[in-house]
Length: 118
Image (cartoon, rainbow, N blue to C red):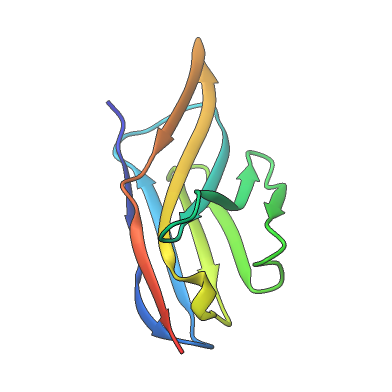
């Protein structure tokens, strides 16, 4: 069973930065899309950003220009650089790997808390 392990969350003041990382517990082949989602209290989980195997990226409008997603295909790791953080960015952030090896797979991390104080 593959596990995704996130790190880098924490408490930061508004305007500050954090860098999230997510790595797989073992090598995974054929990961098509790596992504970051977040869920704030009382809200549904939403896509923050994702990146395909050819490094094509997609961002939610709320984070465009402030967050940057990147990936390392060799290390099976995805990163989220978060700059100019706002209190409304406070949420639990989850990483996600999707792909296909004989059958589709869809792995999720356990989540890491990001809290932005005003």
